[in-house]
Every structure is written in C-alpha cells, then in structure tokens.
Image 1: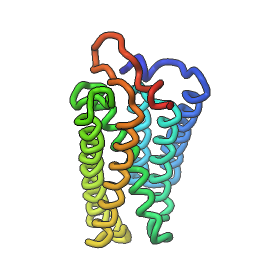
Image 2: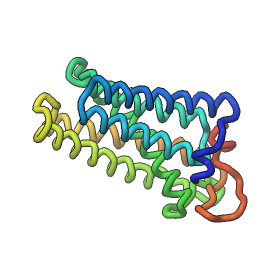
Image 3: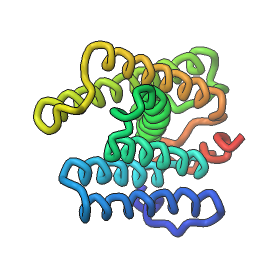
Image 4: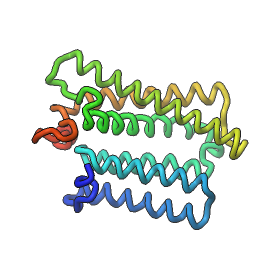
Length: 209
C-alpha cells in the first residue's frame, strides 16, 4: 500500500484524483492560515481520507469524486452552509456517507477483513456486499452525528443538532451507503486481493465499466 501511495500518477484519471488531493492540501493550508483548530482538524481528516483512497485499486475517477465529495462536505461546514441552506445537510450526508462507506469497504476487502465484492461468487455475496456497505455507512453516520453533538456541546452551539436533524442525517447517510453498496456489488467483477497476496485482477478495470 505504501508503494501505491508513493507512485507517480499516470493517465488522466490519476492526475485528476491527485489534483483533488492537492486541493485538499491547499484547503488545509488555508485553514492553518485563516481559520481555527477545528477547521484544521476537518481538512486534515479529509486529506488523510484521500491519501487512503490512493492506496486502493479503484477507479481514479471514483477516487477523484470521493475526494471532491469530502472536500465539499468540509467546506460546507467551514462556510456554515448547513445553517444557511436548510436542506443542504441531507444531500451532503447522502453523497459523503455513500462514497466513504464504499471506500472503507474496499479498504477492508483489500486487507482481507470482509468478503471482496465479486458477483461471480454467487447471489449470496451480491446481497452481502450492499448489506455490509450499508452497515459501514450507518456506523460512519453514527460517528458523524456524535461529532456534531461533541461540536455543539464543547465548541459551537450554533451547530444544528436535535432528534429530527439526527434521524434525517442517519436516514440520508444510510440510503447513500445502500446505493453505493448496490453499485459496488454490480460493478466489481472480481475480488480485490488481500494484502500480501499474489497477483490478481484489479478492481480498477471492473469499476470503470
């Protein structure tokens, strides 16, 4: 995985994804110069997330989209868009949770911790992959809501929390993860190889279809 992180980009897709990572680095720099420690922490998490995705055998187009989604979610928080635009919270939760859940699942599959997405393995696995991605997405959503509660309690009381907001966010995030899992189950043609395994067919070619 370290070799994948340090390799030179090749092809338009990889240059696009690395350009998004560069935007994440610029955003982190802006947070260091003009914002506070909370904003710095947010962009640091986003940058770390995009570095993890670079290590995976996934479509670089998806890699770039994943990074842009995280970046949009982070800037929406920094610019207070969630408070200014009442409905903006739900599509961000839908999109961000979906791409995070799919990427986290692919990372776990790469490490051999969960079944690799492989429709050729049978109907049971085609059902299991979306279900497991959904479970990952719901877990991410719960952590997200805990972060909002912590921010409201200890940092800024203007952060929108409450029963209706939390349930809506969990529902949107869960739906996004379910859609991502269904797409992943259909698009991935063969398993990713576990860490340290021998040669195998990369998910990248299958996910580009």
